[in-house]
Amino acid sequence: PVEPLVDGLHVLELYHGPTFAFKDVALQFLGNLFEYLLQQRNGMTLTVVGATSGDTGSSAIQGLRGKKGVECFIMYPDGRTSPIQERQMITVLDANIHNIAIGGDFDDCQRIVKELFGDAPFREAHSLAAVNSINWARILAQTVY
Image 1 (cartoon, one colour):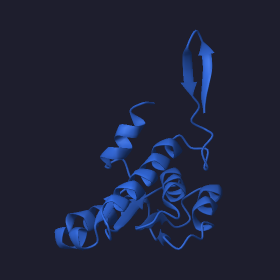
Image 2: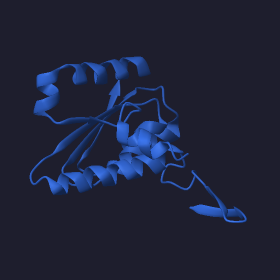
Image 3: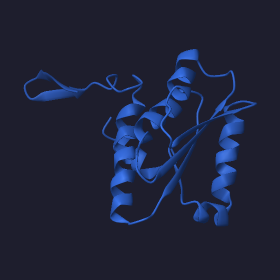
Image 4: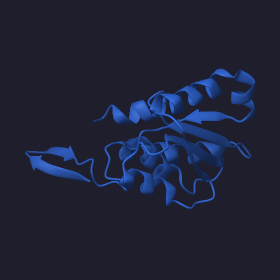
């Protein structure tokens, strides 16, 4: 919510989202934007991939859960996220959400994402999109805060 401070000055409180992370604001916007754009392009689907050490994954999942035409795959290092963040990810049972625990660390997860995007035929065949900070729509949404 936007809260008044003084004389017409307001502040956006970033901790009211579904995961209490500042990233919720941008990733809620991103999920709605993806769904809206897909509705404008009949039959088009999107495969969203992301790597997380915790907060990006749970925020992305909350922003993308149930979105029509979107399949979301979030990779995280097995045993290396906080228990709360892992539960925020793995307890979402929407059919379009897929959590993948990777043996290794965050860099291993990020390497897989980069390899997927680096494979042009695969990227195009599956209409890949990102939720990490390489996504321009997310960056634009976050510039307001």
